[in-house]
Length: 341
Image (cartoon, rainbow, N blue to C red; front, side, top):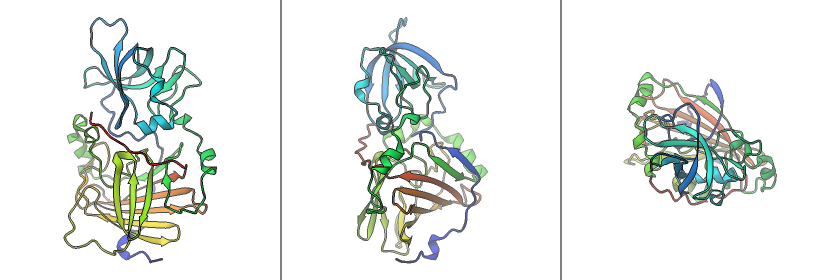
């Protein structure tokens, strides 16, 4: 194994906070009210697709013909919660709960659906059951990780397997934003969100941003390929280089160089990034941004610890860090097939 070159080392990091990771929203839901309301009516259209599932809903006994556009989670999040398309039918009278948009007429962030059978579907991961103790779909009802983990192979594939978000994920973050970075959020317009145009986001938010979809590594010799289900992202990690070639242009994913720190830890340095946002809240980052990622396998090869260090003098007052874990649950990376909203 090659030793890590000096350019890959950014020094130690400080952990300032711990938070339970709820569903990683593709985009900000800040335009929805904080108050939960309920409606009774029927779905007149069900749009079962990525990036988010949408429903058109007509309220019962409404005095006009207007319909509500209701937003739910992505297909992977719904599938992992045990929700399938055939559970919801056009014309079926249902009760829904959610939050009305403060800025968009007749838009609604739906969180819960109650079917005529009495079955409750928690359609937004991270939401809680509202009417039933036996609801399906919330993150609390994701398939038990331990049972699935014990059924997977051990360390035979090493890093080269599919990695999934745990049911109960803890994220440790140190994000010392500059005042300018915080102020940049004021220019963020959720109505022009790149995700809803099916435009893949860039580094480091494709993984450091906490998206919930699985990813895998594929060994192609001198290149280790990172494949994410979200937006079918394919990222090349160059394993045969010690520096970025002269003249390499900036790009959404930047240019990545990888080395093995030891048998179980892959270290990846990335620069030449021109993706403008650090997160889904519109926090700007500059083309000076550089990242160091460490992917560390557990001894049995079933758990992956991901540690991210980000330096960007325009975005952070000192190196920012984020750490989370992933599990080998035996999932597959499915085609995303995003359709613009």
